[in-house]
Figure (cartoon, rainbow over the protein chains, first blue to last red):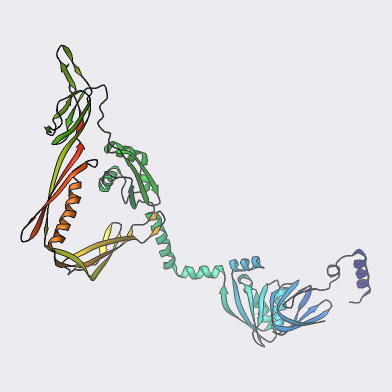
Length: 90
Length: 395
């Protein structure tokens, strides 16, 4: 992750004001209220329980903790999770 | 989201349970293989419930083998599976189709003919004639030539001034307007007499034109000439004129009515029997029931079961109600009998004299015997008895 090339690209993206999530392979997370969690650019699910979901991403494992969590939809680029969210850990 | 739901519904999907230690791996592998999963729920420690497209389901086999999970179908949803179940109930579908076809075929026919606007000519006479000309219950709508029938009807029935046929749904509306009879009109330059239309005594005669033949106080008979249109004078040629006169005359009418003291009145006993029947395409199906009532009132109520606006189908439900009547003998007092007699006489006698007659005298005599009262009514009126009659002149 911390390679020289990565830093150059990151700088370039900053200078040219391009969206980072597209230029660099990092995730974009959208949280709507406390019941909807969307993550774009993921690398698969690590663990799945109804109160804890861990998702592997380009920047590490993201863990969502909540209640009655369900995966509303899962695609190669995007995961939508619904349920009562209580915390998101990076 | 709604669009994808709809898409899934059309292509069919399955709700499956996946049981295994590594369900996460199962999900990841499915995703990387391009299999769309949605509504993933954790049921317990080892199992998850997943929805999957019917097509993708068969591609799971490899993943299942790799991850060592067990897959079981819980439910199949969506259109393709719906259609399958419907196909299994072939008879039901067939029946529905047959019913629709039956209704469609029925709707090609006329099942009701409604006549409106006739006051003089009876309904059944018009119906008979329409039947003869090709408009009747049970005929194909296509076969009806409205213009032709209308013309034929007007030719066949001179009483009609106009007829209009309109077909709406399975109903044929026939609008009729009748001819109003033209009075016999005699032109003012044609010579005519004035004659009496009934036996009477002349009260007043006012001759405007012509030669008065009768005087006030004369008794005239029906058909007698009152004013002559032929004027004959000495030394002058005979003239023919159009007579005009106002002739008021006294006329008499009488009527008799007998009222028995013992009257039988029918009263509802409250006992009612009903029979039900169905009429289909003009054929009646019904259970015959014997009615034990000696006297009864019968009322029939017919109702079309299938009726959608103007689309009436020939299935009738017929309820016949018989309500028993009990005869009750009632004795009338003399006064009651007289009152009733007078009431009836008043109604009866009105039918005899013209509406514009002025009643000058009215008398009722009662004759009694053991059983009844006989009332005799005399009415004296003053009315116009003049009628014009053309003179046939032979030149």
